[in-house]
Length: 191
Image (tube, rainbow, N blue to C red; front, side, top):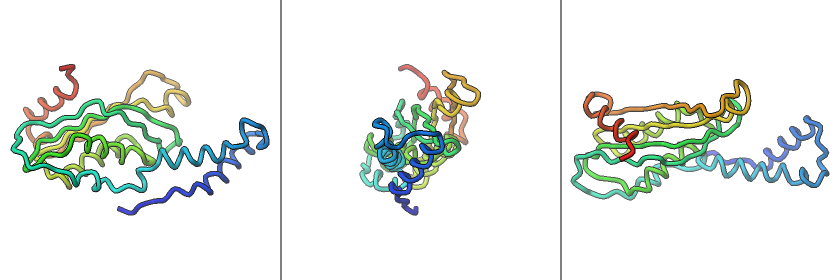
């Protein structure tokens, strides 16, 4: 996976041009440092571009476990690549181990790594599922993501409160209807 570096100097120049294009006075007190602040913000929000998620799954434990492992309600934020606006939500990630289990925080770190990139929710959901399938080699993976997209809630069609849901099922969760039903039920139950 090629690592990308965020060029803050170029972002500052681009933001300066945007501010000029909308008629702002670059010397105004509230605007003067805006290009620098926006560049720092993008560097932070897109930090996943320079991360390799493999680093987060090096800590595994041999454990006999033949039941579903699920981490629900993982909060995340991402930037929609179509409008450069945030989408914010929660991810539910489950897997059925084969030979080992991951440390619990690793699932959240993998979600963050893929979320902190220019994204679309559908791709992000599949990337998380495919990554865990390839590198953890479980019997199955299920990822469900729920998010509110500001590019839809505060502009365009303006439908605040709407939530987009995407899912990616791999292995046994895709092939076996009973396993799929069980994992999806666990993801959406209030236990």
